[in-house]
Length: 315
Image (cartoon, rainbow, N blue to C red; front, side, top):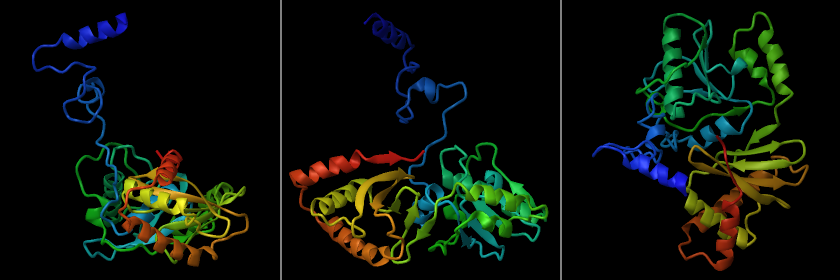
């Protein structure tokens, strides 16, 4: 009690208009003033909840950034330039970007910069890499400090679905990074030992089958607002209509970059092929459940609470 009293007294010992160190920061961040605008280092970066919102491939970008080991997709620049730009999940040494001797630019998606807005961070790396290529330079391009204001991916890319290739190995590194010494190919072989087989379904958007050795999963990044999606999934689960294949089980979901990614356990040996038709049928049932506006029943509310409790936030 005495400690709380002393704390309260300290916070009250401020001049009119002054903010106490333990009081909420006036900027509305929800942090204490001493950890925000009152910090000697200044406020932390502004966190963008859905950094890829507005892009047609938002769900795939989230999946590629957080869940898929090895994949690439060509990018088209908004300014119409003919520069070859490739998006990759990962590059050797976790490099943010690479410019080849032939001028091609490869942008890595799974690099954590920690400046609050992944789209802005990736935009800064891409901008620097393009400038590097225009100057005739080649090699690794990175981001070592907060880029501040500047173009985001939404500003730099021509919007549209991505033509994604999911690779069975990291062997694509040797195709996109100059490798005269063979070091890149050797690094790819080492990385292959840690990767899990993954395939992207063709019948629906942003759904990925994976085999984690002990079991198989379907992980499906979805664009709907969290509350609406949880309601719909609860309706389907309560009705026994949430299977995506015979014997599958909805076990939880990831939350990343403002989107939910439901996860199903699959019986061993299911594979990706049998999921195509079943996923299409599930998507239709989900659309119907999303359109339902009646209040949830007691059973559905219980299911919803259980599903919400089985969410894992990535980063």
